[in-house]
Amino acid sequence: MAIRGQHTLAEITSQPEAWADALRAFAARQAELKRAWVSLNPNQVVIIGCGSTYYLSQTAAWLFRGLTGVPACAYPSSEIVLFGPQVLARPHDTLLVTISRSGTTSETLIAIDRFRRLGGRTVWSITCYPDSPLAKSADLVLPAEAAQEQSIAQTRSFASMLVLAQAMAAALAGQDISPLNTLPGLGWKVLEQTAPIAKELATGSDLDGFFFLGSGPQYGIASEAMLKMKEMSLSHSEAFHFFEFRHGPKSMVNGRTLVVGLLSQRASAHEEQVLDEIAALGGHTLAMATLPGTGGGTHRIQLPSHLPAWATPVLYLPPLQLLAYYRAIGKGLDPDRPRNLDPVVFLDESDFSPD
Ligand code: F1P
Image 1 (cartoon, rainbow, N blue to C red):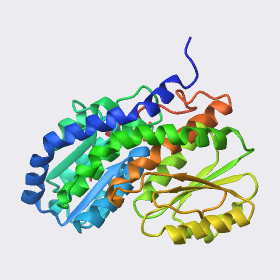
Image 2 (cartoon, helix red, strand yellow):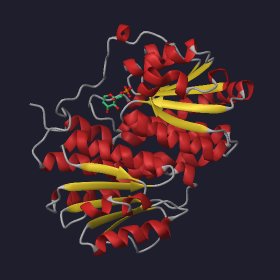
Image 3 (tube, helix red, strand yellow):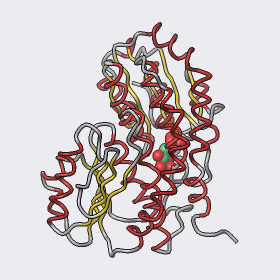
Image 4 (cartoon, protein in one colour):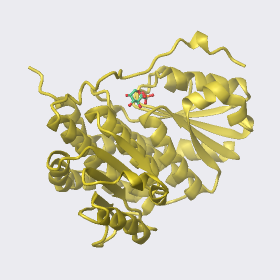
């Protein structure tokens, strides 16, 4: 008999193996990637996905922009489908990066068609299925095959595709990407060290509202955590940039609120101040930090601190995924089969005739 959430827990707790597989796949393609980048010399990078992979695109675009200096932005694939000419200003000089676990999501496939019809020349893809329609329509593919999963809510697939996105941005910026090789070992440690607090917060307190705060490359991770909490546990959850929380959403803080802050290396003192203000209002807070410190309110998770900022986004994921998982189990739900959701969203492509 199936145990509630057995696939989700197995996929979350095995993910460092999939990260290592993704890193091996990247190493095998790094030279080809760099040659293609130099040859294309794009004046902008557009990164797209849907749901979780849109949020991954947000983090990937931030890293691309910050590391390479080339303008990069993230859009839901549907924005290209519905507003392609307005979104793709200069498709001829644009690199389109598509991110999709399945490689079959209709919106992302249609977006590629729109891009090419508008004059776009080069599409790269990050996917768990290198034989998928998405991969076959791309000029270059970064695969995360070992991250394929049975659960509907993305966990190890998201994290492994994020490892590829981090590696891609850093390698194209000329960074030494060897620190990424320590990620699988650090991932095992983070899983072991953070599972207890994730379980305690998810099941201990009488919580009914979750907010995830992240700035810089962490905003996409905060958005993904928000989605995991919705998909797996059917809980009210929202994501904001740290300072944005003061501009209204703070009104929602009460004794049944948990605000999780994904502290950055660069702005952690300012970010901790926001969490301290929330704790003073009676909210529960969890500071997830890569730098030593004591601020940030009621609870704290210390993540590995010696990696460069561009290598750390993936390390926030295991505790955030476990928080959603344990919350679902505590509510008697089955995170393997989230309400109303399918593994892939298929649309009738004939409904979206080209411009
Ligand atoms: C995208 C997606 C997921 C979502 C759900 C349905 O799929 O929207 O982000 O969590 O699983 O599919 P993909 O294009 O990444 O395969």
